Each structure stands twice: as C-alpha cells, then as structure tokens.
Amino acid sequence: MTGGIAPPLRSSYPPRAGNFYWGIRLLPRPKFEALCAIYAFAREIDDIGDGTLDDATKLAELARARTAIEQLDGGTPGPVLTALAHVERSFPCRGNRSST
Image (cartoon, rainbow, N blue to C red; front, side, top):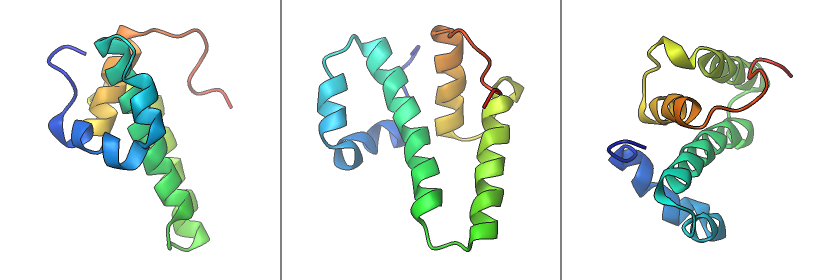
C-alpha cells in the first residue's frame, strides 16, 4: 500500500494476530499490508459478535459494518476502512462485495 498502512493499524497486528501475523509476514509487503487490513476488519467484526452488547445492538453494529464495506469508495472514515478501500483498489477481486 502506498505509504504503508496507518500506524494505529500496523501496531495492532502482532499482539492480536498471533501466528497469523508471522505466517503472512513472509508475503511481499503490499500483500502483507493488504491482509493486515482485512484481518483488522475481521477482528472488528469478531469483537462486535463476542462483545457484551445486547443482540439488537450487535445486529445494528454489524449492519453498519456491512454498509461501510458496501460504500468503501465513499470516503470512508477511520484507518481500517481507509486501508480496506486501498486494498480494493490495489487488489481487485471478482465478484460483488454486496452479495451474500
């Protein structure tokens, strides 16, 4: 990723990612950073699901996260979504991200 990923994002990987971090560390830097961004978003989703919020609030938070992913090109705020938007531009994938 041009200029690397945001420092707050990068600093969260080794302690939280465990073996995943060391496994992807062998990849070329752009792919490593892209997978770190994807992992950071997955952690956010996991934290919502495992958190102490009531079920209705969890569902609302998950719906917000889904909307954020569907609107990545719309100037998404925050380091994780900004990194994901860069990943999408740098590593285009087949398929529709809004499909279930």
